[in-house]
Every structure is written in C-alpha cells, then in structure tokens.
Image (cartoon, rainbow, N blue to C red; front, side, top):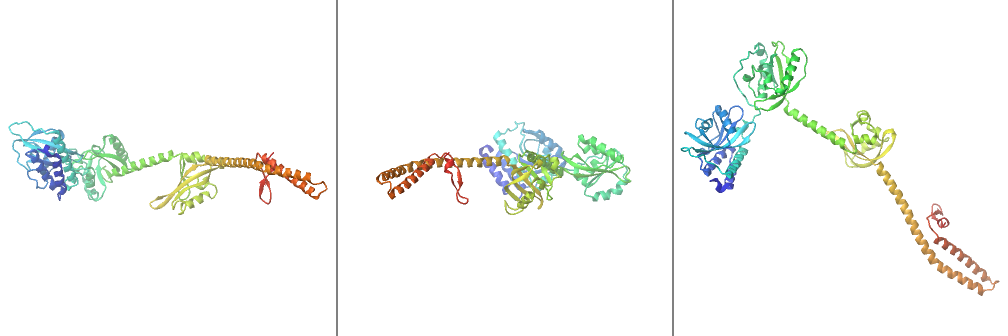
Length: 538
C-alpha cells in the first residue's frame, strides 16, 4: 500500500510529470502507479467543464498511453453534480453518468466504488483524481487512511499544475461559453429591418444588439455573443434585462425610455452577467434605428479592464493626495510656465495663503524675492547641485503674506511625463526658528570668547604683577643705597633719581596690571588695538 513509501510515491509522480514531453503524457503513468500502490481497479484523472458541456479524461491507469478522451458532452451535468456533492467513497452504477463516462476507456460491469479527490473548483472547470474498486458482493466500501488521502491530494495538485496551461484546459478556461437553449416562444419584431442591417452589423467589431421598446432582443451579432457568452438563439426573444445585474434593471429601463422619447443619451455602464456567472462592466449606448420598426440599436463594449485601471488610478491619486496633505513641509508644484498647480496645507501654513488663492493663479516667482525663483529653476536644470533635474538641499528665502521674508531650506526635482518636462516640485522647510537659534548661538559664543579672554587676562595680570614686583622692589632698594653713598652735588646723584622715578612708574603699571578686571582696548597704531590699562583696571 501507499503508506509504505509515501514520499517515494510523490517523488515518482513528480518525475513522471516533469519528464514527459507533453504534460498529458505523464498523467496516465501517474494513474497507473497509483492504482498499483492502492491495489485499486483503476485510477483516472478527469476534467469536467463547469458551464456548458464537456468532459475530458486526461489519463487512465488501464490505458496509460492514451491521448485525452472527450466523453459524451451530454453527461456533464450528472458528473458536475457527482463532484459537487461527493466527498466520501460512494457506489456508482454503470448507468450513472460518471460510470458511463469511464466506460469510454474501461469496461464497467454492475457497480463500482469511487473516491474522488477534487483539487480545482474554479469558475471554469472541476478537476478530480478518481480511484475505483469493484463492488464485490456488497463488501464494505474501502476506507483510506488520512495520511494516504493527504498524499493523494498532493498528487492531485501536481497533476493540476502539470496540465494547467495545456490547450485542453485552455479550451475550458475561456471567460464565457456558448449556452444554446430552446428559442423563446415570445413573438419577435419584424425581421425586415434585420435583413437590411445584418451584413453591416456582422462586419463591425463592436457588440450590437437590436431590441424593441419592451427590451425584447431581436438580433445579436457575433461580437455580442462573444462578449456575453450567450448564443443568439438563446438571447433572441428574451429581455435584455435578463442578462443585466438585477440592481441595474430599473436604470436600464429608464434610459431606454428616455431614448424612445427622443432624448439624446450618452453612454452608460452596466454590469452584464456572463454564462460563466461573472459580472463584466459593459459600456452601452442606445439609439433608435432609422426605419427600424421602432427597434433600438444597443452598442456594447467590454470596459471591465478599463474600469479596473481607472479605479486603481483614482485610488492611487487619492493616496498621493492624502500623502502630500499629510507632509508637514510645504510642497509646491508648478507647470513649465511657472504657474503654481499644487499648494499643500504645509505651504498654506508657511506662506499664509489659502490654496485656492494660489493654485492656477499665482506664478511661483511671486513666492520668492526677485530673481530667487529663476536662480533655483536654473540650478535644478543644471548638472551641479545634485545633477540635471534634481536640486540638493539649499538655503533660500521666500516671501510670505504681507511681504515678510522667511529663511527656508528647500529641495526640488523636475517631474517628467513620457520624457517631457511636466513641471517642477519643491519641498520647502521653514528655517526661521533655526536661523534665530543660530544667531543666538553665535552671540553666546562671542560672549563666551570675551569671558575666556577676560579670565585669561586676569590670570596673566596677576602672574605678571607678582613676578615684576620682586625685581622692582630690589631696584628701588638699591637706588636708595646709592643715593646715601653719593653727595647731593655729585653728578651720579641725579642719575639715581631718574632710575628711582622710572622704577616707581613701572611699579604703578604693575599695580594697575594686578587690578585688571575687564577687557578694554584702545587704538594704537593704524587699525591695531591694544589693552587700555587704565579702563581695564577701573
């Protein structure tokens, strides 16, 4: 049994599916090794089209080399029901649609036990790996261990991945499929006008429907059938609102009534329900058909992808607007002519203007001193200051309300659209408080420098006075001794008096130096300044 080597079984299946020239070639071999591991009567891989008719047997353990088999399309409804409702082993009679389906590749006598493993329930198809054992004399249905079921689910997913993009599956994965039903018994409008316009309508690429005033469909061209998936036979004689979202039925009736009344109506969007159950957004335009026996021509275009892109663009635009509004700094955007096109709340706070008073009316040059905006625009387009199309942070000045100037720091960049310059965006930060703080900082620095000079000068003065007082005291003492040794009329006596006088003068200077408490200067020679000793020692 498979429990003995689960990982080896999965590895073998991967090798078979990956090594086959065609994905479907390996499916039958996978079915064969699974049947051997499970001691099953058969294992088969089946795809059932979810809408319309179509059953494909991709691989079967008893005939592993066969090409995919297309079973009787009429069995699709029964097989879909079987897959949708079955999650445990069940007994299926040979006459059951699924039993008949398998009889395409194997002999089915009496009844059999089937265990389906559905791996894909997409909007387009159902894929299942089916395991069957003969029902022998009412024996109990064989139960599978949970670990075995996990392995089989894994193998089923591997099979699904292997055949996902094959042409067999792509034929089933079309968005819509033809649904042909019995023509409605409702009386259709006159076909005279249809024969007149039919050749024309069949040559245009747009989807065209003709409806009467009661919205009964009289004609559907091929593009319209491809758009919705409904065949012309099924649509003719039915109301157009049958394939439109119920919530929009009233709107459609009102629009058609306005057209019948002679009003010119623009195109409008409605949600059309396709045969696959999907909703597609269709742009409709309605006109009375000239000479058309009161028929209305309805032109339709599938706008689903376009509307999705439009919604994404709207969401992106709204997100960017919220982002710009939430930025604290001022954000300015101007077009190539210099007209301001964007002025966020940060800019309103900085400049003092309301956005509506600036956008589309004020040139960006009015928000800067004369010549400043032109200088910035030149820098942003030059290779310097960040490179062409980019401006690294620079300091500048702006003009705010009432002509006041504010110091700012700003960056900028050129906005391009398909290679062409679409405008320039600036991000501006108010630096007024920062500049004030810088000025205060510089003033404090100057004061600190003066205080340092005063402290240094005071220390130097104290040291100088202390060091000079001692030699001056000696000089004055020796001068007194000399004067006592010399007679008053001696010529040297006068010289000693001069020395004593100058030494005393130096002592006065030293005393003043010792009393210095502040730093005061005076002009000396030219622009040179020296310490004003008298004022500094006051």
